[in-house]
Image 1 (cartoon, rainbow, N blue to C red):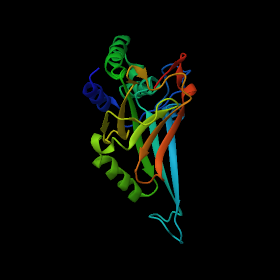
Image 2 (cartoon, helix red, strand yellow):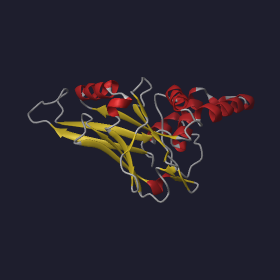
Image 3 (tube, helix red, strand yellow):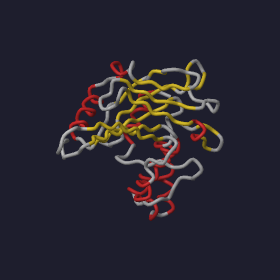
Image 4 (tube, rainbow, N blue to C red):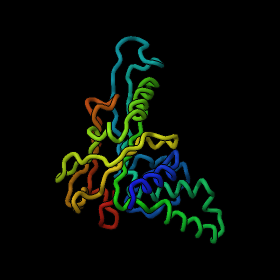
Length: 232
């Protein structure tokens, strides 16, 4: 699979909001409110929050005493996440009220365009939120100015067997709100980076503002099983 084709497809279809779903559930028929409610309840998603205490009365942009910087790290290429994105698309297009023929056309489109193209690539997305607008601006500038070359020695995937696998390419944040996207190979010399024998897989990003001293999100591989197979 051509990397550029996969990446363009990824950037094109991902909505401004997406949800996570538990491995044992089929493609959900949730209302949007439920989808948003379960946004972070996923084996493929982690929130990493770094807190900074500000001294003095009335400190902070809006009088905050503590600054909360939260990174949202997700396996964007994981089938459950993609299935959830499809559900968001369904809700946006009024899928549940469509005629059967129109539903079939949507399903064919989803299978061909939304749920394929990631066989060779692992895509990790990183979003950011803070209660300090200055921190949000600082982190946004960091992600926007980085390129695949400049961030290659800062972003890694690691497992029990492999340490610091480097990215193949990188895409800065776009307006869809998902965040920066880091693309890794699924295999090295024919050996999968992540397998069922691994205990954990970790995403690591060095020198990113608002994280101290680095951003690191760990995922339990046993929780990433779908029908007995690791999904990422």
